[in-house]
Figure 1 (tube, rainbow, N blue to C red):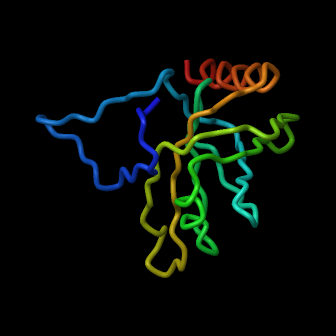
Figure 2: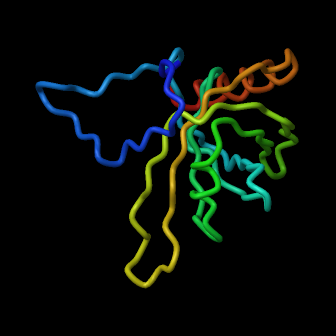
Length: 146
């Protein structure tokens, strides 16, 4: 999706301008997630994040950078994630992904000791049941935005 780059894109310093506008290189448009949808990241120890956007081909999620999670993520090209929505009966296990972007956000307040990071991933090699569940989730959120 993002070419043959083997490194995690740090997009925090990118700003659109008239000479070099940012392009959306995604295969499918992402929709904002209206429900609380969580992701469990295989960072050893595992980390939990919150999905903010999703499409049938990828998603973006945020997490609190506790115990140098971002450093462990920077060493990975691929991840395995679990997705779930509490109380909604939605659970997708072992979703294979490729890291495509990382944005470090500013701490919520000056007193906060941890930053909040946002990561973009592209799904890879989804099984048919995984793709069906993700497509249903995307469709539900597309209807919510109308």
